[in-house]
Image (cartoon, rainbow, N blue to C red; front, top):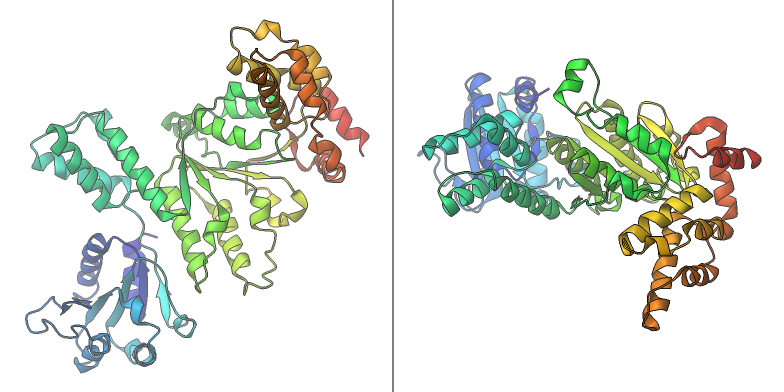
Length: 503
C-alpha cells in the first residue's frame, strides 16, 4: 500500500492523531494536501512554533509560540468543518502535561469528526502515555518515478535534455536521497559547468554517502576486493558466480526472483567478511554495512523507528548488498530481559522483512556462534542459502598464501615455497595466515632484507591458532554443519571427511 493510500484510509476511518517521521517536510505537505483534497475536499491547516497557523489570512498567527493554543484552535471550529491539521516539530512539546492531556482529550472527541491531527517530525519521539492514541505512518523516500520527474523538471528549466542512458544512471544513483538533496546536488552540478554530464553521477553518489553517514545507522562501504582474492571456498564462489546476473532485467524477464541473501557461519578469520565485500564488487552493487547495535536507542519507540528507517533506506538504495557482520551478537538476547522487549521487537521487524521483502536487497549476514542465533533466523525462506565456512584445508591454505604473496611480492612469488608453508600451518585460518605474513615482513624489515619462507615459518611458530584455543566451539560448528544444517563453502573432500570424523 502506498503512502497516499494508507494516509487517505486513516482520514476516512477518522484516526484522530497521526505521527509521520520524516525530514522531507515540503514533499510530505504536498502529498498530504493532495490526499486531504481527495478525501472530502478537506482544508489543510499548517502550524509551526514560530509563525503559528499560516495557511489562511483569517487564522494567520494563531498559536504563535503557543502549542496549547494551536490545539485549542481545533476545538473552536464547528464540528462540521473538515480539516487536516499539520503540526511541525510538535514532538518537542509532547512531554508537557497540558499538551499530553489535551491530545488525549482530542483523540476521543475527534473520533466522530472529519478532523485529523498530523504531527511531522524528523524522528519518532512519543512518550509512553501517548503511544496508544498515535498511529505512526512511514513516509518513504522518493521512488524512481518521482526522482525521474524531478530530474526532468530541472532539465526543462535549464533547457537541456539527456539521453536515456545518462538519465537512467542519474535516477539510479539518486535513489535513497531526499528530493531536497537531489535538487541540491544537481543544481550544484549545473552551476559548476552549465549542464548535467555523466561525471555528475559521482557527485550524486558522494551526496548519497553523506546522507547515509548522517543517518548513523548504515555505512556506505567502499569495495575493492574481488572474488579472486578469496582463497578456497570454491562451492561458495561457484554459487555466487552463477547469480552474477540475477539482478538484471533479463533475469526478471526469465522469471527469476531477486536473490534474497546468504548467511555465512564459521569461526573468526575464515573469510566471511571478505566474501561480503567481494560480492558487492563482483556484482557492481553498492555495499551498505549495518552495525545492528546502532539500531538500539534509549527512547521508547526509537529502536523500532531506526529499524524501519534502515529498511526504508536499504530498499530505496536497491539493488544493493546489505552486510550485517556478526549478527549472532546482535540478537543473542531476544528474550527481552532487561530491555522491555526492545530487542525482541527489533528482531521481529527485521526477520519479517527478511521473509517478506520483494526489493532487490541482498543480505549477507555473518555469524561466529550459531548457538546464540534464534531458530527463526535459520528457517528456510529467510536466506537463499546458509554456508558453513570452516578452517581451510592444506590446498586452500596454499591458495590463501598465493593470494597474499601475489599482492605483497608479485614479482618474487617463485621465491616462496607456498606448498611447504601450507603444510606447516595446520589449523590456521585465513586471518591468521595474513597475520603470519605481516609478522614475517617485520622480521625481514628489521634486518634490512626481504622476508623469506623461513621468516614466515618462524612467525607461524609464534602464533597459537584459534582452532587450538576454541576447540569446543569449532567442533560444535563442524558437527552442526555435518548434520546437514548448512552447505559447505569449501569443495575440498578432506574437509567433509574431517567434519564427519567429529560426529
